[in-house]
Amino acid sequence: MKKRNWLFVGTVILSTHIFSATQVLAVEDSEISTTSEVNNLNDLNSIFPESEQWEEDMKNEANNAPVEIDPKAVGRARAGSWSWRDGVICITDSYASSPLFNNGHAGIMGASRWYTTVEANPNDGVQFKSGDWPSRFGGQVWQVGVKSTSVAQDKKAALWAEKQVGKKYNNNFLNRGTRSTFYCSQLVWAAYKDTANVDLDTWRYASAVHPFELHQTDKTTLIYRKK
Image 1 (cartoon, rainbow, N blue to C red):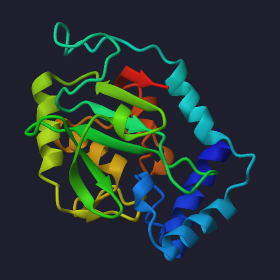
Image 2 (image 1 turned 45 degrees about the horizontal axis):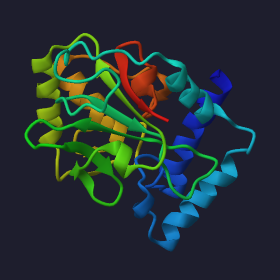
Image 3 (image 1 turned 60 degrees about the vertical axis):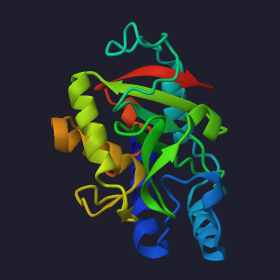
Image 4 (image 1 turned 135 degrees about the vertical axis):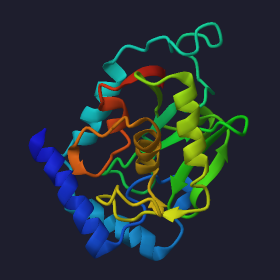
């Protein structure tokens, strides 16, 4: 795993400083639109050998983990069902035009609007997005809850994320410390770090926060899975 992890870090650095690949993280199928964006992804694909299966290893971890009842939603949600609870973290493996690199995507359930998530995407930065993820994404979808926080703290994290709406996308995936721009999993990580002092990064990929890490950390519980 260590060799694979550092390959990811090296690729992040190359994509940030050489290829300026705005589609490495948080890519939805409709967001690959220009020739330069496709070329950037092709450059990234050429770096990753076809034998690399680190992204599949990460997905397998999520697929083999038990789905637990959300302890903060007892009596309000069926075990294993999609949750609209404030602050719940959403993760998907959906990605576009990059078969050798599973960038993944993450978002956080909003608190002030019904049936929305707050997400950072390359084309429009941080925005509200409507609709449940099992319907929006064709791939696998997971939801996790943060173990140590209260319902009130989860709502505070969601409201913090909402205050970032309108900010631009962060292309430098190693610069998680900035609060002027965000990529998808950085936004979710920062929401809990800045409001509840809970660090959801596993450091498997240096200072970059990969969407799948939000499940891999021992600080979250898997509460929903769509295969």
